[in-house]
Image 1 (cartoon, rainbow, N blue to C red):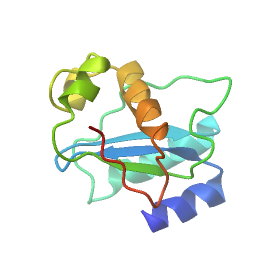
Image 2: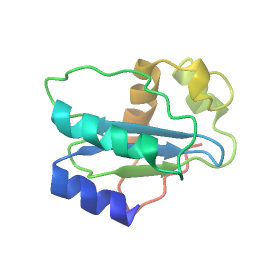
Image 3: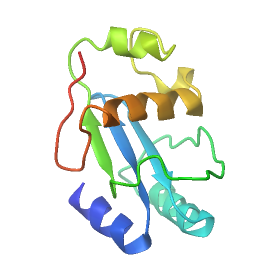
Length: 122
């Protein structure tokens, strides 16, 4: 996490990382070429497996501009939170849209998501 934050700060990338002990969902914001380069690096990194791009689109304004890489570790029963976003009872990015992932991350960001804090939603 610290290395990602340093790299993102250097490259002008902001975003959020969600983790529930099985799945990671990462949202990256920045210049198109920089994001593409970062994504290529992630896809060739042996620590990553089954990387899938859910959505790529231009945005007018950064949604996670306060964080080089905000982090939310989801523990316990988050089914109510997930259901609010139409996700179902478990986090499963294979069953989600990019819009749902961003909505979930924004909801978690409202609870104090940042690169050092751990957010546990109830």
